[in-house]
Length: 270
Image: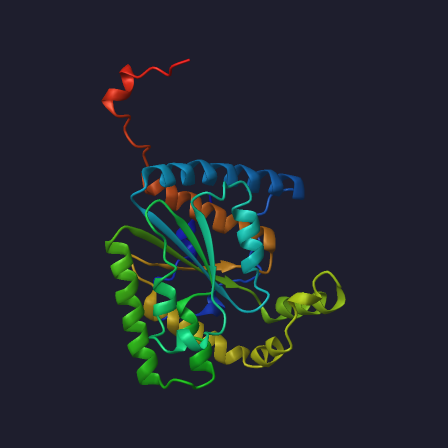
């Protein structure tokens, strides 16, 4: 298993430039070996997720953030490929509706956090409210700092009430994003994924990198750490997040519920 600690955001002065988006250190000798390893990890994740669901006490929240085309959907498909849908749920966050805007920005997010025994994957998250809104100057520096503090409080509350939180930034390079966006335009099967507005956001790449760095520096905590996951290689990305998720589940020391004593004398009638 990889040294996952090297991908964790621990310094208040870290820079995304210190992380190689094209890191392929988890790749094996062949595509077949990589596919085997992904399946092996997915099977182990499924086994532990089954215990988490049966235990029905603790919760797991996986947050996926990243620039357009960084592979959030692909990560979900591959990492959870062997999992029983029972006890797993996906929540995606797009532009807020009028109903959501009528509440505080965490309202729509708090409704989607995992319940006891559940794994929930956030495809984007409450971090949109300190990323896109800051890049476009819809909030000022003071409001952004207030939101960092509110997010830390929110995540600490989740942690203290039984939720284990993993936050992954899918670190794609600008060159790789260009290739994937062009592929979406050229492939009729993928064109539906293309949004012209993505090009406007791409033009703000430096501003987004600063916003991500600032957000991760302010909100990577012991109870809700950020991990910078190299994402130019889809396979390397999937292997790393699979390893991180598996280790997190293993460290929870999950146990099936104890069998009630009275079950020992029960017999199923013909």
